[in-house]
Image (cartoon, rainbow, N blue to C red):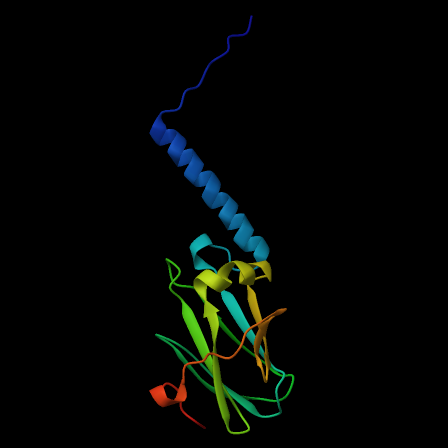
Amino acid sequence: MKVMRIVTLNNASFVSFLLVAVLSQLYVDNAIAGCGVYVFNARLHVDITNDIINGAKIHCKSKDDDLGIHSLAYGQTYTFTFKPQLFGRTLFFCAVMWNGKLEWFDAYIHPRDYDRCVHFNCHCPWDLTPQGPCFVDDCLPWNKNNFHQKGNVSHA
C-alpha cells in the first residue's frame, strides 16, 4: 500500500513561489518581445522616420540625455535606444525643423507608450508628417506649447 504525503506551504513559501512564477513569466515575455533578457532591464528603440522633406533636422532629449541634432533625408529613420526608468517616469521629446518651421512631439511617454512599444518587439515606430507624428496608425498633432521660446532646442 502506498502512503500519500500531503505537502503544506506556509504563507511565506507560497508568496515566494508566486513571486518566482510571475518574474519567470515576465522574463520570458521580455525575451520573446526582444526587449532584453531581464525583466527590469528592457531596452526600447524609438524609430523616427522622416516623411516630411529631404534634410529635416531632429533634436531629441530627455531630462537627463541630449541626443543631439540629426539631419534626415526623406524616408530616412533615426533610432535611439534606452532603458526606461523604474516606476515609469521616462520621457523623451523631439523637436523637428524643416523649411523654417519648428515643431515638437513627445517621442516616448512611459504610461502611454511602454505597452505599445513592447507589442512592436520593443520598437516605438514614428512617422513624421507635416501635420504631426504618427505611431503606426495613431496620428497626433504637433505639441501646442512654443518649444523654441523656452530655449529648449538649438538650431544647427
